[in-house]
Amino acid sequence: MTIFISILIAVLAGGVWALSLRRLRQRRQLIAAPKQVSRTLRAYTGGRWDAVIARAPGCLTLSGGADDGEWRPAVELAFGHSLVQRDRCAEAIAHLERGLLLQSARRQAHGGDGSPTAAEAKMRHMLGYAYAATYQASAAIREYRRVLATPGLDPAIGTRVTAAIAALDQSD
Image 1 (cartoon, helix red, strand yellow):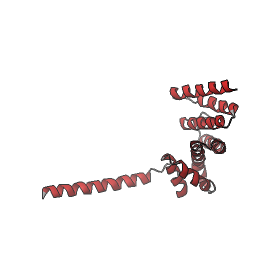
Image 2 (cartoon, rainbow, N blue to C red):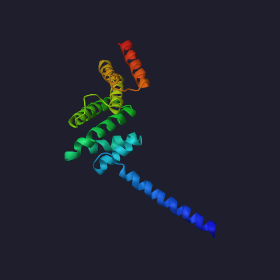
Image 3 (cartoon, rainbow, N blue to C red):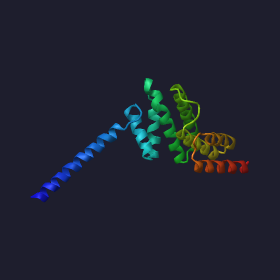
């Protein structure tokens, strides 16, 4: 009888734990956004590039009003990054550029300084790669130099970006 009660308690505790985790997951939304946008950004964080590519154009046609500035840069960047992951670099450039511009404007509107964040450096690196893949070496080098100017850049990333610049310089 005590074994049965122990098993029953363990199952109930596991059920409560699972429900708690599920509710916690639902509360982790960082950006106030329409449901379609939240789904798209969850697909992005899950690495489901094709889902992001399918959903992002619909998200970008939405008008979010005052909250638009919160989520639109994230969707543009997620869309651009997903396109790069699927070797559609020419299409990705416009979304990465627009996303970085919107993100910078948002940061400055909230009193931030002009220096890019580590997340923006990653997207600039992605933009540089897209330029390089579409044979726009000078634009790629410009973006890579912006990455190198990021405060607190990981030295390993700096080494890779410097190597990419050197390779582009040699190809000219």
